[in-house]
Amino acid sequence: MSATTTLDKPTATSTSLVRQERSKLSWAVADGLAVTWRNLIAITRIPDAMFFSSIQPVMFILLFRYVFGGAIQTPGFRYVDYLMPGIFVQTIAFGAIGTAVGLADDMGKGLIERFRSLPMARSAVLVGRTTADLVRNVWVIILMTGVGLLVGFRIHNGLLGFLAGVGILLLFSYAVAWGFATIGLMASSGETAQLMVFPVLMPLTFASGAFVPVATMPGWLQTFARNQPVTAVVDATRALMNGGVPTAEPVFRALAWSIGLLAVLAPLAVARYRKAV
Amino acid sequence: MTEPAISVAGLRKNFGSIVALDGIDFEVPPGTVFGLLGPNGAGKTTAVRILTTILNPDGGTAKVLGRDVTKDQNFVRCSIGLAGQFAAVDENLTGSENLRLIGRLTHMPRDLIKARVDELLERFDLTEAASRPSKTYSGGMKRRLDVAAALVHRPPVLFLDEPTTGLDPAGRADVWEMVEELVTDGTTVLLTTQYLEEADRLAEQLAVVDHGKVIASGSPAKLKASIGNTVIDLGFSSKAAAKRAATALAKVAKPQLDTTVVEITTKDGARLLPDALRVLNTARIKPTTINLREPSLDDVFLALTGHKAEEEVSAT
Image (cartoon, rainbow over all chains, first blue to last red):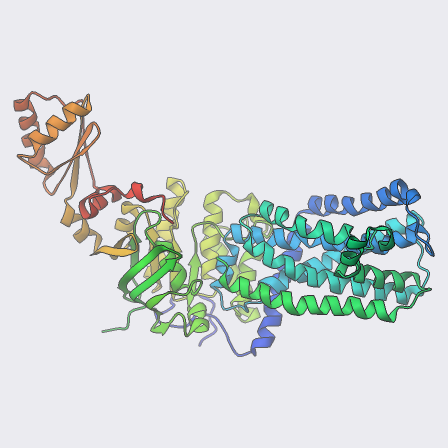
């Protein structure tokens, strides 16, 4: 095939300007990056959305630190140190709403239909969405850490422990994003997607060890709270960031949850994408 | 005989209990424009979605450039461009970024993408707006960008699903001109439309689709000739008057009654009109309005199916 760029004379049966000499996996990575690039550009084009979505986690920090904090007893921790890992997990879990809404909007605007007619990898739209949201979460964590430090949060277990905690957070956020991707592809619009994820998010984040010690809850709720991923990830992050408690067991549980969720949710999302119109 | 660029045989698709395609057949010779004409819900979009590998058919075969769309998906996807009913562009990206994205996702060599994108922006008159987010574009500009996006990898076969729906007359004329240029260049175009005028202007061959079936096919001229070239609309002051008029007119033509209007489709309007007026004069029924026009899609449907196209809007 000649490498001319002219529009003028494609013969009716010529192949197009497409090249196909790379491996499937290599294309999947390249396509995923292309869609990530597209989503990151979109984020920079709507700075007001970024600004206002940053306000909410900051308000949550201030609200819990100063309004509820005085009433909540957290043995072994200053409340602000107890709170910050919880708020991190809550914020990145809620951040995955953006994943669902973004995909639902792409569906509504016919973009997914176009993408599905292209020779791109079937995973690329989802990889691109979830990866862009991961990058956004890095920014959100940096911002929240800054605000946390201003209101008294301190890193007690060294920078390495803190960064390991951030790693656990990001892995969990990535797993959640893939789950919400499926919801986004099933929703009829961005607004519906948003409404669909709330009933999942509220119990998981609030009936957990994120804001209050699980031991203060009624017995039946403790059973739920102790055996769900948000508590596992909060415990691991808290142990890594604050130190002074064993880290191996909570970190193992958090990794097991996140990797397990990812292994189940990512194929589900891709399967849904293959059928989405 | 050259192999058809698109061939569809016995194609079937159901959505639950709804039959979207009930065994349709057609072939599109390379380098021509083929029109799928029909009302909303006739199955046009379903056919396009199957041909563009977005949906799998429940039966029958669909081929693009001789390759089966379910078995040879990658080949087909590399060979087609699709512009759907809505301008499927990312509104947050600029015109140029939108096209570059498609270039990357169609796996074009990096060094070709920029030149190709600039060429398309120029051709679709978007060079000046190229670095503005496409949400600032007018409807016509968005649609041009959408069609340009379908052409980035220079596909030999282009699918346009209702490319002018929602456009103003100027935007519509733009799209028509563009399709004509593409076909001059050798591209094969399959276009769906609800507008007889559009099919007439662009398509060399047509298939009229209704309830998932091809109910007529051929050149636009042949199709129109088969039902008549002229429609005479006679309006009356009441339903009763219209009904009496229709009865009287049955002597000279095949009138269709639609509330207070009697429609006559004929191959020879100049001869029939005086006859019709004489009959009405004799019967002492005075029409309130007289209108002579070209047949519309509604008239084609009425002639072919006995029902009007717009009554079918409710189905998907």
